[in-house]
Image (cartoon, rainbow, N blue to C red; front, side, top):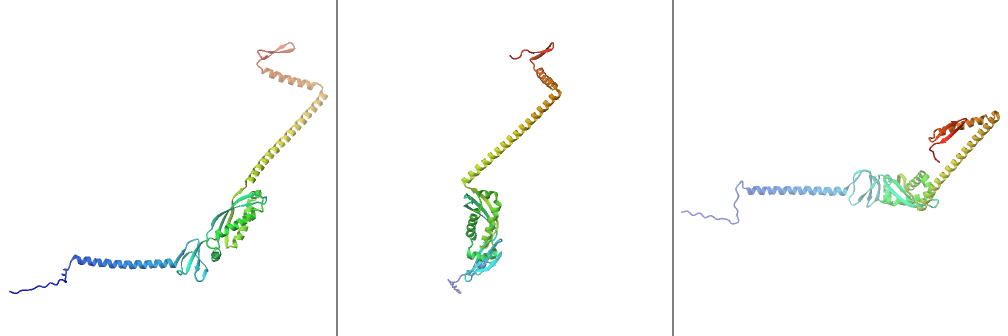
Length: 305
């Protein structure tokens, strides 16, 4: 009888037969890991590219210009136009300027030539000169309009308004606006700014001047009324003169007729007057006419006492 001894190694594991599900799961896990590693590599590359693009590229939108500040050379003289541009990271910094027209309202209180207080508001449309943006940034900064416009507008307004009386600011408003614009354009040009339009939007006088204007209007109305009364009196006087001349001329004609024709004219006037009286009495209800011989008798029947 033959004895066969089987020795089993405890460290050894049985080999799984082909087609075992465990093998497929292990293969799938390894493939997923490789895919995730590839995706992480791509994401890292994209992130690095985005970071490089963020540090190396900048965009200038429409209606804007850029000025470059170099850490070694200072403000560069070139003005960058619209579009996407390259810069040296950590060395060059772009500063964006808006070169479109921007409105601004500036108000000030000043005195007129006749010492009246007036509050005047000015609307200004301004823009920087693109070719001089490096100089503007070097001397004024990004808030150039805040530094320049309030000061020059207040100074020019006080100087121009002091040349006119209070009423001339109303009657010669176009001339005042033109002089203010000419002076402001000259002053703004020294700061490399262009003013496209300057207009007076609000004008308010002091309480004393307002009362004086109201009193003046009342006086003018009273003067017009007095003038009308005088004209009416003159017309009435002229009418009386004409009427008197007509009556005098009529009396003269009557006198000439009496001299020429005697009492016949008087008899005619008597007849006309009697006819008018008879017509008036005929229209009365309570008066009757009774002929008696050669003279008529008037009876008041049921009439008043």
